[in-house]
Length: 143
Image: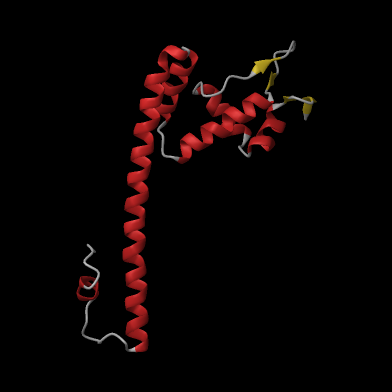
């Protein structure tokens, strides 16, 4: 339920972010998000929290570890004096993510060649005796 137009209960916040209440409570325990409390000590969240969680999902989507996310959040709380550290951390995560993308692209390329090899076997455009390793030689890629 929405408490006000900009204050969300944990259930409404879960719907707004696409995360379960269980995940949100876990993020709280890990200090990734810090809800505000009303006069009855019930947690609530704001639109700013929605944006923050969406940013966290981007970080998670790049493969950033929980430890790295916690370090980033600690530095963020320390203010502008840590901008260089935060930038360096994000650059490292980006490079690692790009390397994973390149590796996945390579795996997909080999997979595509394997599918093509099977199609060639089925339509007899590839000799029955030709192995996949031999087939790959024409692409000069590792299998």
